[in-house]
Amino acid sequence: MQDAVLHIKDLCIAFGSKTVLHDVSLSLECGKTLAIVGESGSGKSVTAMAVLGLLPKSTKVQGSIFFEGVELQNASASLLRTIRGNNIAMIFQEPMTSLNPVFTVGEQIEETVRLHRNLSRKQAKEVSMSALEEVGISSKRFSSYPHEFSGGMRQRVMIAMALVCEPMLLIADEPTTALDATTSRQIMKLLHALKTQRAMSMLFISHDLKLVASIADDVCVMQHGRVVERGIAREVLHAPKHAYTQELVSCIPTLG
Image 1 (cartoon, rainbow, N blue to C red):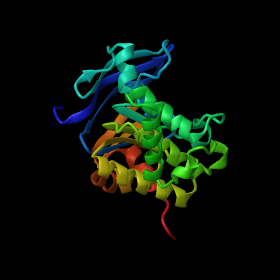
Image 2 (image 1 turned 135 degrees about the horizontal axis):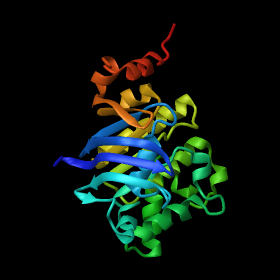
Image 3 (image 1 turned 60 degrees about the vertical axis):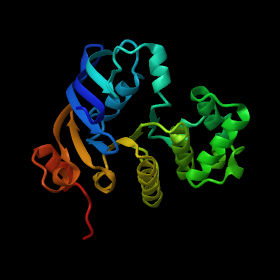
Image 4 (image 1 turned 135 degrees about the vertical axis):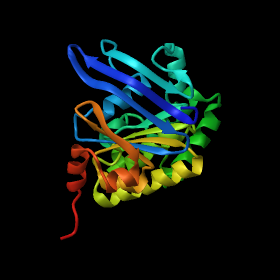
């Protein structure tokens, strides 16, 4: 697809003799949010890790992954290092363990900046402090350690770290899993606002269909490592065609 920032075609992944992904194909259009939904073990996170080239070397991978027309499966290690964190960024699902406890949050954001952008230490610090402010954290907390933040605040730090290099594509892997309902809503509003402000594309991974309905343009439903349904979010969630999607939608809690 010419207007797709990310295009995955016939992706198969096997760990040893166990195939965990079967002919997965999906496309994410520029500036849109594509949600991948499904129960635990359906292949959502494995798909995201394959995009970033973060799977173990022993993993058997077949198929194609195109980012901005560049085939990532055959890309050199140096090109992948350039793309990761710079053009494609990822927010992981466990904010309580994703940050290094022995470095300040500011140092960890600054490291990302200096790795991908040709800036002096002073400039990198200024950019990092601005990134904290953008996600609602005072720049005065630059020298604070992760244990001094709540789960929601740590996730905001992770968002700042992911977006500090202004990536074209953000992968959010269940970014609200460990957070309470109120904090989850705040994080989702923040992600949506930043995505819109920066005109980014986002691959949003979740099993929470209520969150998906509030943020996604398109939805891809996975079961047992296969794509069973895909389409415009409102159509898939309001009139699901596949039996598995119907079951997922029926599990959404309602008042009364």
